[in-house]
Image (spheres, rainbow, N blue to C red):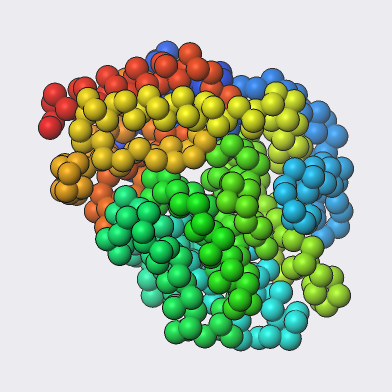
Length: 444
Ligand code: PLP
């Protein structure tokens, strides 16, 4: 095509045109093959071109594609809500369907505020979060995000929600080691609550494993236990933003299960539709729904396409496919296999400072000097060179934040479809090693 009317993320960049996808591979119109090691934006969790999902879309489309949520419900929406309640741990029994992760976290925020209002407490309206977090691009979701780069242009429009340090052990904000830090970064939450006043705070939101804003930052064992205790002690709800981690990405349906922590509200997105349809959800516990059921009986949020039957049918088919093919129980061993191979690369390429993450959500942070952890100069643009170099090798990886404030370091996420085979992981690592070799030879 010699003319484009499409507004692309970078207006002056050339984007390959993808023709079709099969499994973990995508093919462009020139016939070039790409191994999708980032599942797009950590979304295509079951790979591309899965017949069962296409079939489910077709079947639903033959029945009905749209009903308006204030007039009707649909079989697809009802079945999906039931299936998610069964698959999620604890009493997270209520689903409110939306279309994107940003809508899911923003809905979660509104439900948390409404919960306190229904109980007659009107002052609890702030939502605490962490630096190096990303909860979405709409103004409410961005207000909760500790993402300096994405906030910058809109600061005057954002709510002034307080933030605490992330559990970033590789660059501990307190310069301590995980073995003897006393979890200061978790306890900092209580200090901030005291300063702001628990009476003003509705909820604390966190990504169980920090994704785009931190390159798979994974907290140590007791972190979420301490966080949840602080929240409970201060009557503050805990919202788990599982938009990236949910639907099996880290080896359990919800990543929170791995820390044995029970959130009050969960935001889901990305893997829910696995890229086949836009769908996301706020998943709410019985306890949080109770005062709403006995109070106003209505959640003050929603969109025209909320609970769209077509999207719900896709998500239901994705969940059935995950269960039928026993996908989640295999994530951990595949993740360990991939992570060990990435760790081996560290001895060849000393600019790989850290390899981290859980299940098939892995992150690598790059440093100029692995002893001092000094980052590369941001002018050098290592992450962008790496992404570009990988793409030349037919490999897709995802840029992530890193460094002392999240924008002064280099990291990538490697998070292929959960259906990837060990042979395909070998192919992924081969392409990645070649990328690193060329980068080192040409630029370092
Ligand atoms: N929350 C997390 C943890 C995310 O990673 C993202 C997107 O990357 C979002 C929320 C926003 O989701 P969406 O881009 O679908 O609006």
